[in-house]
Amino acid sequence: METGSPRAAGETRGEEHGEQRGEPVWTGLPRDLLRMRRLLLVVWLVPLTLGTGLLLGLLVGPAWAAFALLPLALLLWGWRLLGRNWASWRYAERADDLLISRGVLWREETIVPYGRMQLVEVTSGPVARKFGLASVQLHTAAAASDALIPGLEPAEAERLRDRLTELGQARSAGL
Amino acid sequence: MTTPDTETDVPVEDDGRPVVEQRLHPVTPLRRAWAPVAVIIGWGVHDPDQAQHQLTRLTTTTLLLGLAACLVGGALYGFLTWWFTHFAVTDSELRIRTGLLFRRTAHIRLERIQAVDITQPLLARVAGVAKLKLDVVGTDKKDELAYLGEGHARALRAELLARAAGFAPETAHEVGEAPVRQLLHVPPRVLAVSLVLTGATWGTLAAALVVPPFLWFATHSLWTVLATGLPLVGAAGARSVGRFVAEYDWTVGESPDGLRIDHGLLDRAHETVPPGRVQTVRIVEPMLWRRRGWVRVELDVAGSSNSVLVPAAPREIAETVIGQVLPGVTVPASLSRPPRRAGWCLPFWWRGYGIAVTDSVFVTRHGLLRRSLALVPHAKVQSVRLEQGPWARFKGLADVHVDTGANKTVTAGLRDAQEAAELLRGQAERSRTGRRDARPDRWMA
Image 1 (spheres, rainbow over the protein chains, first blue to last red):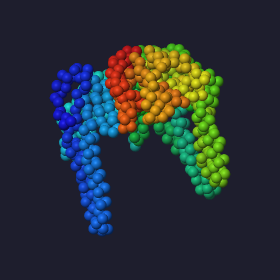
Image 2 (cartoon, chains in turn red, orange):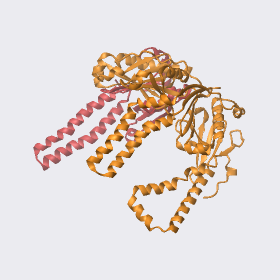
Image 3 (tube, one colour):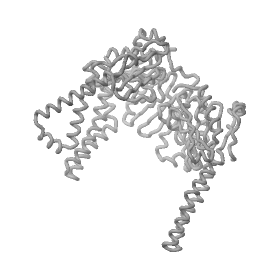
Image 4 (cartoon, rainbow over the protein chains, first blue to last red):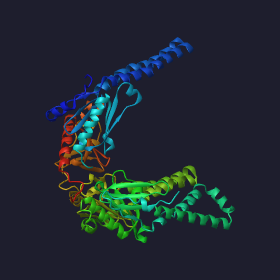
């Protein structure tokens, strides 16, 4: 799955009615999110590997430097894990609800009807901003709903937010 | 602080008419009169030796002076909180203005009312006053009107419900109390027997009787025994006598304003749940009740803390009450069980699981000894989730969670993966169409 190219809002609406019958049109997360997460992993684990290796090797004995393999293994494993996790995230906007599917081992698929939406939240931390990413979260009256899309290009995040708000208003229903 | 200028402060309605503000019942200041006394008692219990020491040092004069200061302070505090609390009913809101130093104004929108409660603790019954609380998502203890005169509380409830229902504001005063038709009354004998047949009652009672002597033999320390024994006895009392007292004279009635629930032996409570506010209904069937065919019915309303609809009643009667609460809903007789291989995920208990989907409700069951059947109207579904762990995927199973507006989740556990996926899509579709046919928030409009 390649990066989710943000589709124009007009296009999406045209597809809506066709979508309802068959498989929804899935969108993945941007590759930048994976890049950011891997960079964070490297930033934390490479100094740890080097530090462990050098300190133990110089102070205790060369054989002890083998302990540096632990963080290294963690780094390699995490690298793969992040890739798989990133690839598993996807979302689809249907005519009346938002679908979010995620998880590799523990799979989860969430459907939130637009009319149930209480608020849409767009957040972006300092690192995420550097990578041009923002996350979109939908809140319903049920705290368990937990519909989060963790990293989107800001333009796409804003488009999604506006579209969700608009659809939420149009289909709004009480509790 | 300056005295607030109530003349210029008076809020106005959208069309410029001044809002008529009211005060609470003059008995209200007494409500907090016990607070200083409680603080002193708390201090005495917390540190008995020190308290004894200090008491002997005090002369009669200082004791009297201290007491007088406490009384005056308490009375002043009570009076000021009462004086600075106002409320008003406008066309669309209930406004509560309160606070001496920190002002707080709560605007509660009437069409968002989930339930209206009038409660009367024992002392309030003696004084002829009552508390009135509007349950809206997000309101808390501060937003209740305590206390109002008994008649005033009833009149206010009728007016609030009439306005929330969508009657014209001019006529809302005159609509008055809606007539009530009694649906169910739980006789004290049934309630008592149902509590005797509940395992939890005996469990806490046994713990309260067994644990303190055991501790006494083990430690010979009176404090340890008291510290563990008293909470246990308290819990046992709350489970048995407390529940009997709270659920005594349980009456469920039906009126155009919705469901009426009245109960209580010492503290009386009167709850009103307007139509279309019930998010989930659960039928709980403890093992020992099964022979008598009794069930307990619980309900979830968003923003409301009370959850019992029927404490104990024969199943047929309980089902007719449910039919009134969720119009057009019949409790399905048979449910489909998970496939046999679910035993690999949850041995033995998987037999208790089951689901059914009807035109109007999503039904799941769990529990083997204490069966619990949950009914969620399709229109009340907030979101649907499918979850699948690695072991469940290996066995081709998945769980479907349905989240409701009362912040509760109902789970259809261990379904076949294919079936779960269909259930997920189907439920999203049903909740969408279900919402379209749902009744409006203003039920009389």
